[in-house]
Amino acid sequence: MHELIFYLFALLAVGGALGVVLARQPIHGALSLLLTLLAVAGLFLLRGAEFLAAVQIILYAGGILTLFLFAIMFVSFREAEKAKKWTLQWPAAWVLGALLILVLGAFVWHAAWGAAPVGMGPLNAEYGGNTQAISHALFTQYLIPFEVISLFLLVAMVGAIVMASWGVKK
Amino acid sequence: MITATHYLVLSAVLFSIGCIGVMVRKNLITLLLSIEIMLNAVNLNFVAFSHQWGNLLGQVFAIFVMTVAAGEAAVGLGIIVAVYRMRSTVEADTVRELEG
Image (cartoon, rainbow over all chains, first blue to last red; front, top):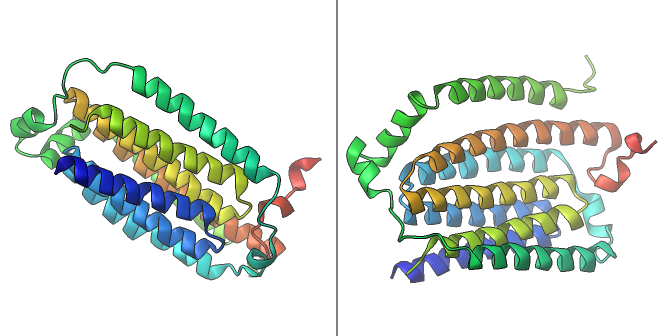
């Protein structure tokens, strides 16, 4: 059963990713990305990362993708139809991409990860849940990275506003 | 039995597809979407290793990756909107001021 769900989500994720690359209109690509994001959230759930799965759906599917859709609405794509689709880049990129899959896949396949997976069970039980365990780690051991990332978000917010209002007439 | 290897192979496939997307697509928004696929593949790796060794560091790091992805999408889309204002197009080939 676990295998079946994994392969289903894996198929959805890869299909969505191919949709992003192959879709001619960016709006179709964005909706394909939604499929990939939800499938990856399902895969997170299978690996016992409940909090990350929820964050994936809320932040990625709810936040980032909405931002993408707003930008796509803002920009018109008359060039998208007349853009030449088959250039010399396509075969070269697909060969390189297949090579990358082969190299990474062969490396991963032959590496031995030792014992059977430990799983998140013991840790989750220690703290009373996946969310509690993550928050405990985030606010004790990784407090400084957490503060740095909040500063990063502030800078990104200011930067996004400055870039988006570039060249607007007063 | 689904092992870490399955997740790593899937992650490699997703990463490569994102990489292909960055190489072949000309539309700036599709480039950003492909980068999001690559970041998702990386997160999948982190979560798979986190489960393999029963260590939370992978999941905490995945949260940081998601935060950076959010910032990257916000700034990237801001740049795309600015480019569209200047040139009425978002095709990557038309923006070549830095070519020299």
